[in-house]
Each structure stands twice: as structure tokens, then as C-alpha cells.
Length: 462
Image: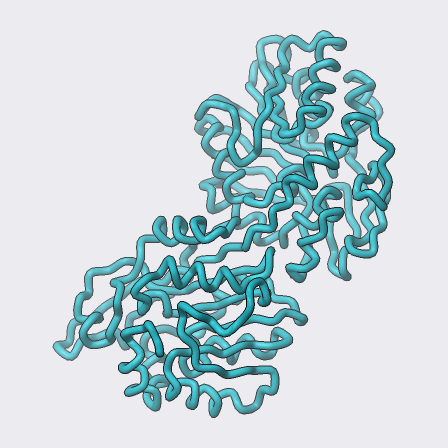
């Protein structure tokens, strides 16, 4: 039994649906969804509300297996005929509130033009998230909110589209991070016409989010050990700067890119615990009197270098989540006589800084350690002054990776498993509201699970 009131309509129009769909939206909508998923050939995915196989037809050549689910047996019968050339599909009639998969079993779930037929969209989203592996992605395409009431009677729509802010809120309530809600550049138009001739031109959005992994505790423990000078080895998930090689992570050469002159400017205690993957100060163009925030300040190397640049009329705030790191940085600041640097306990996702107080934000190989990078960049945007600058070094992937790779605790503490594909990382910065975004390769690089991983220097403005 299906909980979708639109099911009888789709049973009736199944044989005509391919022609009808072509008038409502084009392949560009499907392409926009797939572009946000960063698919890997070994992934197993699902197409929820698959209809006659519009999305599944594109997914099948890209992944290992596709589950094709719909509430209408007639629609699935047409889908079987449409997709007969593929041998990696599994078809099943399914209720959207009770999907036929065990918890945490799929790498990605797609739902195209499905949500506006669901009586309880949040419950439908929660059910799709339930079957995602930690690190797996949910991708939804649907209509923006509109006023065409006739779609409820003629097309059996339950919702007249959605506010994008509502979609973002539902995704976050369902436990997704790195949420992006964006334009597809497409609209439901040519075929969207009522029996009375009323025409609808409705824009279509794409929403993407990732199921949370819960990596903070392992990251915090690893960095506390480093701050306290514990005997760190790669077998403990606590490697020193240099080259690391872990079967589950990969091999990466780390180079922060600091000159000997820069290291000579600051206390040795800070220079010897440089855990970055680049040098954000090199591109930040800091000026006398500016207020600087260092997200994930660690032992303080970048905060102290910034303090030298902004001088006594400027100020630097270092924020870190690890008490042991903060204690070390504060002792170093006192010993070095840095009166314009303060260190605060806090998290990148909730910065202990008032809105509009900072000229420049720097961060060095830290944002990849956070799960919800969308929230981090939102916080960065909040605390910057108008015209303020974001200058971060971070690790990114040069291609898609499996969610299982992102679940490595050792990989998170080594700034690898938390990295995102470069386009997704930049997308999240743009979603936060930043403009004039530029990206350049930085100093660290290697491979992980056969995929390039490297550091980038990203500059952007509020």
C-alpha cells in the first residue's frame, strides 16, 4: 500500500509519461542532480519515485548498481522496458515512507520531481537519509514555490513547490550537512499548461546534502595528543608533518610553504607544531590595523605571523576547539610578548565572535576537519565586515570518493577523509554568499584510494 495520493494518477498516465515528462523538464535537470552527487563507479544508489526511469537511465552507466523504486507498478513496468539494456538495475514497487533497504546501505539517493507529491516531505527525506551510509549524499530536484493551484487537481500535486529555505531546514533536521540548494537553470514550462490553457513557468532547484559521520571526537583527541607532545605515529592516527602512508588513507606529502624568514619571526614553540597544508599568510595581503580571525589556530603559527603583519594597531583572534592547543598557544603568546593576539575556545561551526567584526579570516588545513563546511562558511560570512576577505588553505579531492573512505577516523585526523571534491568545496563557499572566489593549487599533494588529493589556496570576499 502506498502513502502517495498521486499514485492512481501515475498508474493512469504511465504509458504516456515519457512524452508528458519531456514537456515538463529536460535532461538538464537530471544532469544538474548528478553533477552534485560526485558519483564513483563502485557506488550503489537509489532512484526514489523513479517513474519510467528518467534519472536511472543516466545513473546506470555511472555506478555499480541502481535501485529503481516507485509507488506505481505501471510506471515501473514502462521503466523496465525503457532500461532493458542495463543489467545493473533492480526494480521494486516501494512506498516512500518505507523504502526497501536496510539502514546505512546506499552511497547516494536521488529523488526527481518526487517531493511535491509527498504528504509529509520531512518524513520522506528522513526515510531517504535513513538508508544512506555516513558520508552518503541525498540529491533532490523539484519545483520552487509557485501559485498554480490547477496543478493540484490536474497533476495531483500535493505541494505547490517549496521555499528553498524550507528545503535546507528539512535537510538539516534530517541529519544532513554540507547542504546546497541551488538553481538548475531549468524550469517546468513547455508542457505545464492547464486544461483551461493557463501556462506555468516554474523554476527548478537542486538540493544536495551529506549524511553526518560524527568525526569530531576522534579529530579532537588526535590534536590534543599533538599539542601535549605525545608519541604520535601513523598507527595511532596521529602523524607528524612530513609524509604519511596509511592503507585506508593514502600517501600525502605535506608542505606548509613557510619560508625560513617567516619561521624566524615567531616563537619556536609555534613554528615546531605547524600542522597546515599551505601558507594562508602568503596570499592574505594583511595590512596594518586590520582585525584577523584564524579558524583552527592550533599552536598559533598563523596567528603569530598575522600579528606581525597587522602590528600593534591591529588584532588577531585565534579560535580552536582543543583546550590543550589553546593552552600551548596562550603560553607561547605570553612568552613571546604578543599583546595583540587572543585565543578563544570555540568551534568553526559556531564562532565565538560578533557579527561584522573581522577584516580577514585565515585558516590552514582546518575546515576539512569539520563535517558541516556549509555552516563554517556561513559563520565566516557572518563575522566578516562588508568587503572582508576569506583566505584559506585546505585539502580537497580531485575526484569522487566512496563514503566508506570518508569514514576513516585516522583519515579525518590526517586532513584527508574530511576533504571534499574541489568543486563541492567551492560551491559551499559560493552558497554562503562569497564573491570574487579564486582558487590556486597550494603546496601539499598525494593520492588517496587512487584519487588525487591536494591543498588549495582559496580567496573570496564578502
